[in-house]
Length: 52
Image 1: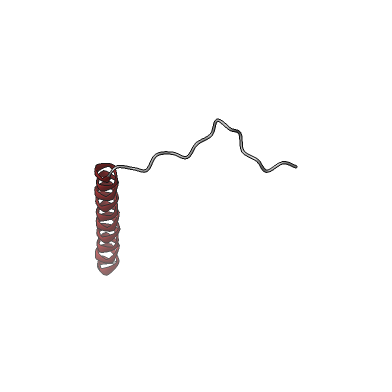
Image 2: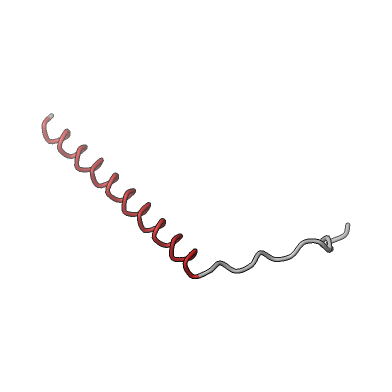
């Protein structure tokens, strides 16, 4: 078995700072939305549980 890589393959260029910042903002927004959805779900469950 050969473990050499083809000659035409090169490493991807590093991301620019603004691309990294955009990814960071996207991650923060996704995390905030997920945390908010989980908090609302738990709040709804506790509210419904206290009624029964």
